[in-house]
Image (cartoon, rainbow, N blue to C red; front, side, top):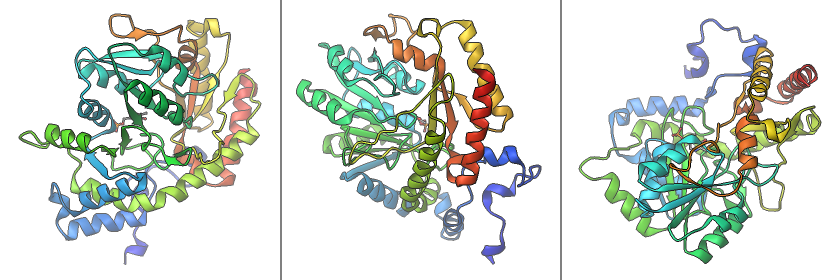
Amino acid sequence: MLQGTPSLAFRDQGEFQISDFRFQLAPPWPPPIDAVRDALLAAYADGSWGKYHGPHCERLREMLAQMHGVPHAWLCSSGTIAVELALRALKVGPGDEVVLAGYDFPGNFRAIEAIGARPVLVDLVAGTWAIDAEQVAMAIGHETKAILASHLHGSLAEMPRLRAIADERGLAIVEDACQVPGAVIAGKPAGAWGDVGVLSFGGSKLLTAGRGGAIVTSRDDVLQRLRIFCERGNDAFPLSELQAAVLVPQLPMLADANERRLTAVRRLLAACSELPGLVPLKLPEEAGTKAAFYKLPWLLTGNQDDCDSPQFEQRRRRYIAAAQAEGLALDEGFRGFAKRTGNRCRVVGELARARGAGAGTVVLHHPVLLLGNEMIDRVIAALHKIAAHSA
Ligand SMILES: *Cc1c(COP(=O)(O)O)cnc(C)c1O
């Protein structure tokens, strides 16, 4: 009987036609997943939809710990709060400094401020969206307590180098793997290099429950402090049984979906390596390394000096509008923090690349990457058309 039921993702989409070209290039997320529908019905049948803690949360924690090769996973209500909880559990607090890239998820800067610590900004590695480990090493001062390293837009941070720096200088690492669940760096899962790894299950993310987050760690003391902080009086940042129930069946599907996204990205990049005015991502291809894709980025170039100009901003806006008119889910990247004042953070160096990334990044949202070669070829054709008109 269930077989004939329309899939979840399509049920409420009254107006659109499945044959609509624009819809096809920017399909809704999450897609219909039979195993998730079954999990929802099972959660209804067994009453776990109305429960707080229970077997689904237990199971999800076990699966996340196993997936990352660590003993502990902790569930919480978002990736953003997971970063803050991670910093607290590492005993970072008022007067301490945390080094992060001048181009990062905005909530990461705020999480550092939220615990009373001071952000220290460093630049990206040239040609990537990844924090520059050598600049991190130079930025470390007496007050520096931790490094916050994010894997952004398919770039992977140099975790072996960052780990060596952190170990040598006695710092902790919070590794933000919100965009790259299932990615591998030098043979180790992304998220497992940090003292703490952070995941998001937000509505647009590769693994989703609409909202939610998790922390993975090998450190018993971190788990202990998380538990004490989160369970004071009430569990104030929980992931519910219902959320866990829909995440559990998504985990075994992740590796295959990541592989299909990676294949699509390879096809796209091979056909779009020379779009005028756009610098593509250099795929991380080192042995034992595998990227994952939440957003596929390009850097719109101009004269680096004038990337802060209104003309440049306008150019990016026009570019994105043209892409959206072709049906592509192309958008701006993060703004970055390069313009923040010295009152709020310590800035190391010029942050030229972070500034360029904040002004010039455009990102393609991931759902289209699962739709197969024919759709990818349509994306490629659209990108060539836009680039030719915008050059
Ligand atoms: C989405 C995201 C987060 C936060 O996740 P939420 O669950 O949306 O709070 C943190 N860092 C990065 C890099 C992200 O992409």
